[in-house]
Every structure is written in structure tokens, then in C-alpha cells.
Length: 516
Image (cartoon, rainbow, N blue to C red; front, side, top):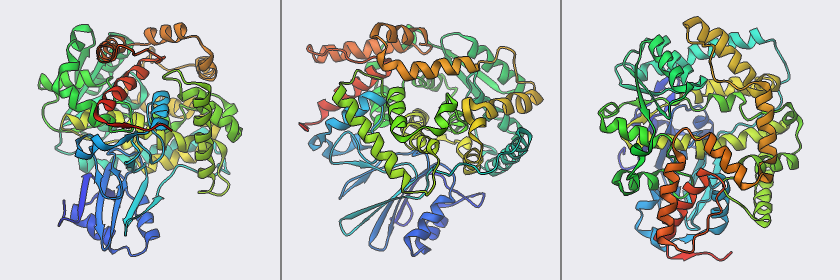
């Protein structure tokens, strides 16, 4: 808190320097016009949430990825809504519950309760004289690139951007304890390589889950780059008893916060390593969010380049709203919600290309409230998070990359494997990357997943369960049954069961449920 006028969580980078809280206050309060403030915010990098008093106004601001959620109503603002005394008098919003059950998040400014709203990714909310004004200062909408260059031209630019980002973040990491969740994939490996290029040595890598190829690749990368490495094997013994643990009871509320599904994937590993002292020292955790997203992992097929808006909403609904069984009327309501959101996006940028509408929704909604929200587990255990792959320089580079290079991450994968990893000896023959056929197969699965029978969905869930989600969700399901003998499972996935547990617990806190 600065002079009782500015509250900051996280850090802000401006002109390649980290701002002190006094510098941040000075910058924001000397801008007189609202458009000036929005322009300034768009130049910020870092992970932050800001609340600032400026004359008769109060500003609520979240960064581009909503790293630290903020919530507000006409007379309050908070970052942990479950700690509010008022929560017992809030009313559950059934429409939001439907969306949460399907997708693991509540989109837009709404939450699971009618009385509280959330600040969105890249948004500033102004409260003045009992009135609320909202504005996006950052988005991911853009026209189709006019010029298409060859691979090597983009590779040179990508290398240049990587060096600039490396130089920008190096001062923040010197003499700090660094933790890296290192999987067998490319994003976290790229982060590991960037740390090596920086000359950072105080790095502890860790991976987790059942024993598989990713664990072996993670170890080989850490060994090659000469980083400390730890592995937490997931099994029933590790998970048993978590429901009664005080850490979990606090964590799931802080992570969900009336708007998102809490993640269990990293939770057991982080808690185990915290208890063993490996993650006990406060430091900076650098997850690989979200190189695969900004580079095109969601573009399974070239058909998405020219997709129409009504087709896009159907694609989004079938691909992402399948955690639980939804009635036809519920699906129709969600389809209308998506269509309205895409229509709103088209008013922000003239001549926006169709696939950037999709990308903007992914980054502002699913990425921020589902993927980035998973990093809350590191904040919960006392660490700071940093996401250099989310830097504005990387975002701008991939905005200008032609669709053909973004489809199935073709440019990103090739550039990393053949030109970054190979130079440092961390490209391996057994790398886990999907082929073109596998991407097409995944595209078809997503397109028709809503038609697949429950037994087949459950089989897919079990075959892909490398983090003991079945064991964990069995415990959650038994807990719901013990409280509600009439409970009938309608969830099609492990994530659906996690969401149902949270909604069940939330209803215990609330007195009212709307009937709309």
C-alpha cells in the first residue's frame, strides 16, 4: 500500500524497468485523461493487480492475463471473495453455474454470485459517484497480416524478440531463487533454455505425475542445462487424506474465487516439495504459460482461418464446454453467450480477422481464468510467479505470424526444436509432439465430443490420467455423496467433478440461489 492510495500485487515493468510503487502511483495519477491511462497501461508488462484512488475515482486494474483476480461491487473491492463476511448473503447465479459446469470458468465480468463482479484480463474498471465504467486497455484482436515472409525471416525476428525479452527479465532474476515446473513439453523447456542463456544458476526444476516419458525428458533437460531437478511420483498414498488438510481447504477457495475451477494437477507436488523443504524458500516460479497458446495450439485445422462467426461459436461450444452433461437449452444459452461476445469483439477493431476473435476469447477467458489461474498454487505457497512467454514482445510477434505458420504450432515447434534446442543439445528423438494426423484426429474428437457416449469419455479420461485425477475425484465425489444422498453424477470428466465439488461447497456458504 502506498500512502493509502495505491495497492499493488505483483510487479509492473515499464520501459524495461520494474516500477517502484511510488513510481507507479506517480505515472498513473499524472495522466489526466482516461484514454491516456489506457494507453499507458497497454505499455505495461509483468503480472499485477492494482487498486488506486485518484481524486474522486477508484481504479481496479488487472494485467493482460488476470494473474491476480480482483472482484468488486458498488461498495467493495477484494481479491479473496471467500473471506468476505458478506458472502453468506450473496445469491448464487444459476446461469453462471451452468457455464462453470461446462467450461470450468465464468466468462466476462460475471461471477458465480449476482452481487460480485470480476475485473477481466486487460481491463480497467473505474468507480466514481456510485457509477461503474469498464474499458479494455489491451486485447488480442488484429487484422490478417498483409505480408507473408519466409520461415527464416520470422526465425530471425523470433530470435531477436527472445534476446530482448531475456534482457528485460534478467535484472528481475539475478540473485533470486528460481523454481521451474519442467515437463517434457516445449514451453517449459524454452523457459529453461532462456534461464540458461541468462546465466542464471540458482534454478530448481521439478516435475510430477505417474512415471512416463515426460519425466525422463524433463530429467534429461535439467541434467543437460546443469539445473537441480526433483520428481514427485503421483500415487494413492500421496493423495490420501488431502480433503481434510487445512492447506487444501484454504487453497481451493483462494484458487476458485467464485469464477474458476481450482487445479489439483500441481497442488500435490507443490505441497510435497514445500513440506520437504525443496520449495520452502520464497522465490520466483516461472511456468511455461503460455507459449503453446499464443503460437497456435488451438488452431487444429486450416479450416479455422476463414471460419464464420456462427460456425466459430459452435466450434468453441463443442471444443470447450464438455466437462459436464448440459441440456439442449443450456447449450443454446451458452451458444448465444459466445455469439454475443464475438459480436462485441468486432466493434473493438475494424477489419478484424475471424480467427483472432477466437484467439481473443481463448486468451481473455480460457487462458486467463483456466490456464493462468492454475499458477495460483505457487502464489498460495508463498512464491511470486513470472510468465515471460506472455511478454508483449512475444504477443506482438505471434499476432503478426501468418495463419499457416500458427496452425498446429508449426513455426513455434520447428523453431524451438531445430534452432534453439538443437544448439544446446536438448532436442531428443523421443520428444513428445503431436503429428499432423494426431492434430487432425484431435480436431475431429473436439468437434464430435458432445456426441460420444459417457463410457467412451470416461475411458479417454482414464487413459490420459497421469496425475491421479481419478483417485482424487473419487475422494471428492464421496464427500459430496456424504453430504447429499440425492446427488446424481452428471459430470463427464474429472474436471467436471472438481467443479461440482466446488459448487457444492459454495452452496453451503450461501443462503440464496436464484430461480432464473
